[in-house]
Length: 190
Image 1: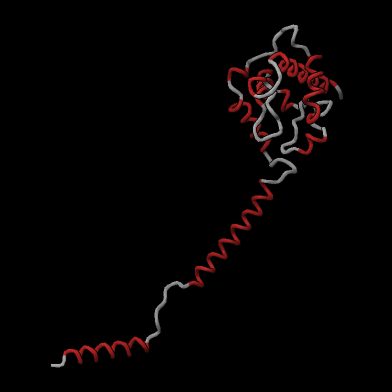
Image 2: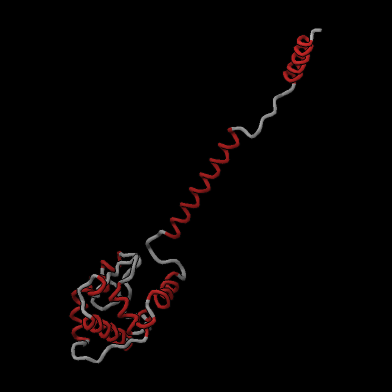
């Protein structure tokens, strides 16, 4: 019996049938390359549009100032500072605050406190306008805390001695007093 020969004949017939039939292929390299190109183009477009909208430096996005202010008031500033008021001490005066402001703050906030100094205008976000309602509606304690601790991811450094600055508590309170004065003087000028 020639079982080996019969097996060989059956194998040859199968090979002949397979040779006539077109080979089936799964998704080849072309599909994967096309998908990769589409993903790269989509990612590049997203990065470009996102970068031009989010990482721009001209002006904050709509609502960004409001959200930032809300976060500073409700998250960043500890509750124990919100109700603090300017202490009535001989060492805390608006005149002393003006002297400190002229030396330490006017570089960014300008002589009038409007945030219009050339250095402050180049920052992102720009230096705050200390005469604007956004600043003047903060409590004394909130302003104190912002001066003492600074504001991360902005040009506002910490001025409090406990946080790396050189100012005492009374000096910071004097600055708060002066900021209140310039806010009142701006409100009274037409």
